[in-house]
Length: 308
Ligand code: PPE
Image (cartoon, rainbow, N blue to C red):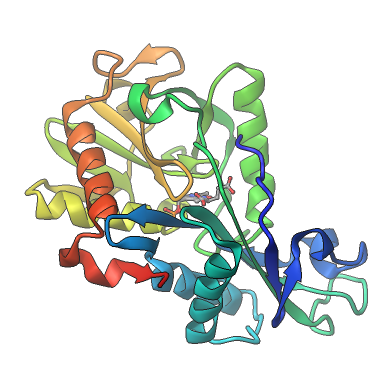
């Protein structure tokens, strides 16, 4: 996992605070009860300058996550969008990962969160490759996790809540200890769900499949990006129920995520996918994804928020 490269400021509930002073009390509610929602966003150096990729969609999901958890954001989407751009400017970052966090702060302890103030922070720093330096090119080896994703009406998978990442950590730790880059979790029905921090796509006979939202997946922004790009390129994309064994007989498999971008999967449970190299359709989608970002393609103007 890439380490954090310190920047100058972190924005905390209305103020730009020097990096090393961006602290919370040990008794904040979120630290004890997972009462926080967050986002992971990237800003890229494009040919038209530094631009945040799909900032509005990420902030919308942040506010949606908050709504599910009955948290009232002290700031609007427009305000958060403005602050994010200011933060990148103030930190002088050309390319970065952005982490907004909306959390229940310090007031009282006990499960009931309502008395605790909703606080917010946004940090941005330079981040390396998520699944290792060679992952984008060569692909990663993964395993099917022995941990399932959450069942319906346990934890809301559509909310990007820190609490969900207790499950993600179990998936990730198991994979790492067994020598894999990542784990793929099944849902409570035994169907394919997603990675600990990525959505999953599968290609069989030139049709692209991805688990539907009822499979306990996060509605990924990159997932949405890839679906849109793929359809525009003329591919059929199906959001559906995917049985576990489809993973093993897929022609191509890949992960998507803000951090993971478009990462091919070369084996699952030591069963080689395709010829063990990045598949042709995955390659085309990955190329198109990075081309659109590199050029800040005006055809997708609404996906870019420029940091001028
Ligand atoms: N599923 C999960 C569970 C998930 O955490 C992510 C993002 C995705 C799917 C893909 O969503 P999107 O980024 O909108 O395409 N994971 C974030 C956090 C990873 C982390 O280690 O922290 C990310 O990619 O930023």
